[in-house]
Amino acid sequence: MKDPDGRYQFINRTYEELFHISVDEIRGKTDYDLLSAENADAFRANDLKALESSLPLEIEETVMLDDGEHTYISVKFPLKNARGEVHTICGISTDITARKVAEQELQLALVDAEQANQAKSEFLATMSHEFRTPLNAILGFSEMMKEQYFGPLGSDSYREYMGHIHGSGQHMLALVNDVLDIAAIEAGKRELDKEPIAVGEVLTGCMKTIEKAAKDGGIELSLEMPGNLPTLYADKRSITQIVQNLLSNAIKFTGSGGTISITTREADKQLMILIKDTGIGISSDILPTITEPFTQEISDPYRAQEGSGLGLSIVKSLVEAHDGSLNIKSKIGEGTTVTVSFPIEKVYSATEPSNRRIPS
Image (tube, rainbow, N blue to C red; front, side, top):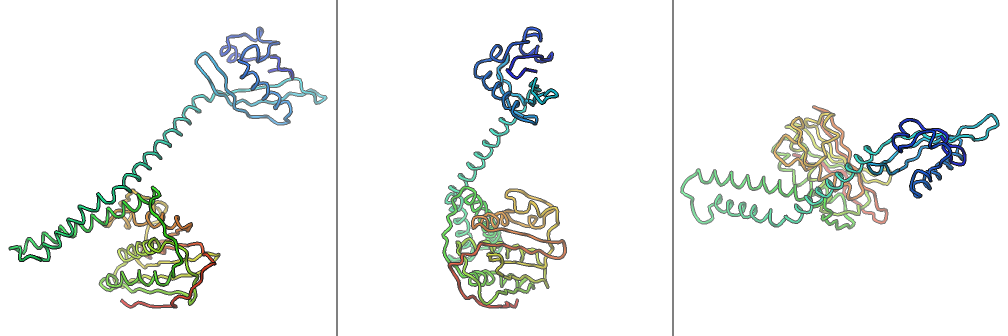
């Protein structure tokens, strides 16, 4: 407790122990008698703020003690007499040094983790050629042997084994491509070549790539669009990859007799693409984390199949790279609807194909 001029009136026992001075010895002294000029200036400035304030003032203060610098949270407030005149400045301080140290260590740990994650992404993004070259060789030579380009192998078992090798190579290449894609996106090395693209042409092309798989699986496909949609200003390769990944998931988890549909609409200056399936659906506890990369959930049917578990992560990253948004709604046994929305550049407009149904 101090008077308005900053002279001590009272201190408690903890204060006595910290500064090795008794309440009788400190009475009448100021912070300039106890602390460095820098500390004393700061304490006096805070006291003056408390004098001018009608409410308690919370301030962070630092002071040098025997074991080093300590940080305190101090609550300061004026006491007034019946005439409203301030006669005492009260201060109650709590030592938060340990908390501040923990916060600093946490911040450093977060920086280290971010740097490690960035280093991982940078490494994977630059390893594209080294990863893909041997896999392409495995695929190429195994295909030559499987097709017996230079004559028979001598045993049907060899053909079976070559088929397994080739299939495994294709699967491994798909996994590597997914990992490299997400790494390149995270590292900022995925270049987006934005241009005006006709969404209808992209969607029609993507539907064609899954027609055979849908027919083999007994799944009906449909594509429905308004007669006139604005042209999307985007990276065509990325938009194609987004739609193909979503359609691939839908095919994988929709059984015979099911349907997969793509619809588009324009709303709130957004071009929306909806991909809906009548497949097995996703449980509500999985939905919040289903787009996170490098995580696996055994209970998640969208990751229980063969694959890297990165398809939806790649979709989310590419959508966000276009300032778009991704929304997934699903219910077990009833199917899934994925909506991707992109901001529309009104500079462009185009007439696109109207409703088209693709029979399986």
